[in-house]
Amino acid sequence: MINIVIFGAPGAGKGTQAKLLAEKYDFLHISTGELLRQEVALSTPTGLRAKAIMDRGDLVGDDIVVSLLSRALVNRSTLPDPDSAVDPWDAQRKGIPHRPEGCIIDGFPRTVQQAQTLEFLFSKLQRRIDCVIAIDVPRDELVHRIHERAAVSNRSDDTEDVIRHRIEEYDLKTQPVLDYYRVSGLLVSVDGSGEIAETNGRICQVIDARLKR
Ligand code: ADP
Image (cartoon, rainbow, N blue to C red; front, side, top):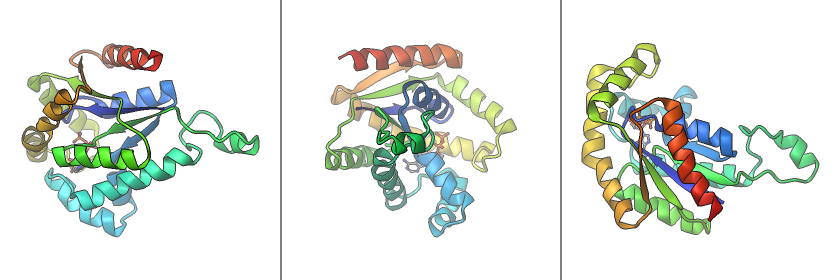
């Protein structure tokens, strides 16, 4: 079981890459942004609280994000993965419990405190983070990409002011997470300035090397 954190500023492409990796390696993909958007779409009490915060481009409180993440980690790591190409029910009928061989977390941690929480959650599950892949994209390119995405996205946080604020939040609170993982030796930076496939190739090299160990 390999546990990977995919890290990057808004617009770096972590969601896109995480999805591709989850398909290629049959990894469990957990995106805290997606978990939150699901709550919003379902208008749950959590979703209603989170929506106002996300629409401002602020970070949602750890009480909400950590409980969504830990629920997803515990439930989805032990049950058949509904997103997997393998038919989970068929596998279950045949008595093959389908457990993804790895897990890829995107959107978490976004603060040093969340990084410590993730370590704690993983230690409770007798797991550990194997590597943190940071997708490195120059600032100009990030801004350009988010604006392009905003033109076609229906995300209510993809407006000019909110995008600016999300990047400020990243610089202030999330960027220090890079140093945290650099010090712990888990950080691998990958050039993410090119095409999706190029970046994906670079990330796959990192993962393949880890899987061979
Ligand atoms: P992006 O990386 O483009 O900002 P995400 O889907 O990862 O997109 O996150 C969207 C929003 O969801 C964030 O701006 C924030 O409000 C909220 N969010 C996601 N993950 C977290 C987290 N780990 N902690 C706090 N808020 C989060």
